[in-house]
Image (cartoon, rainbow, N blue to C red; front, side, top):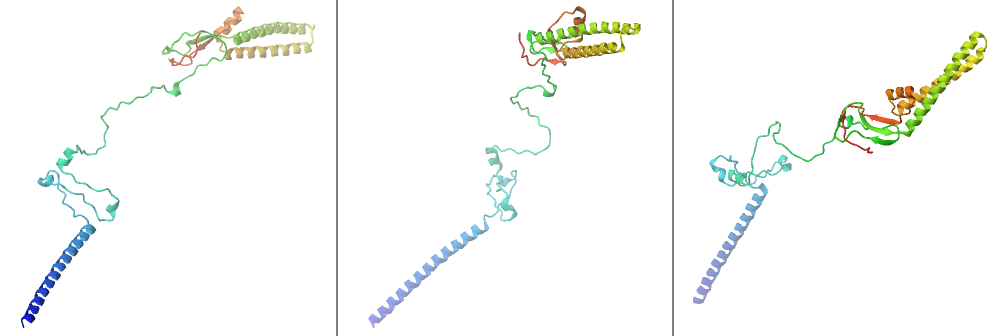
Length: 255
């Protein structure tokens, strides 16, 4: 009898222990499951949006969190960060209204000053020769026609000699033509002789015109050509004039 009651008592005690263990174990499992569900919901739904409080309100000093968006349209935008007035002051971030107006800031940068290339004129003498004079220096203001250089040209001297020779031949042919015409009027010369002399005279006139054009192309002026006719003296210096009014920027000719 005593043994039976003791066994029943032990059985009841063990049963209570087992039930207690089962209850404790079930509570632990429920706690773990509740935490897992809470973690899953929190990460699935995202952080709760905090209220956006203006910096001037009393709640501006409270820290505010990053507010992610679950909308499909906000997926491509940058994250939005709200900062308090103190954070803005510490980060030295200043804001200003964007307006369209002329800037008042002066920006100084290094550079190179160059003239307008459309107004530059490169002066090049046509005749070859030796530089005798360069009456201008860099930076001089010159007028159109002012001498920039004087060149001694053997080519010009040759052209002047040829021009004077053609002038002498033309003068002789002109006198011969006049005599032939007088003889034709007197009947001492034929019409054929007059035509031959006239053709020769015309050819010499063409030679003189060609020699004159060559002198002008080599840089001889009207005064120089007129002086050449009068004195029959060869002046072989070529004057290089300034084509426009301007400033001398480069000098590539020296004595």
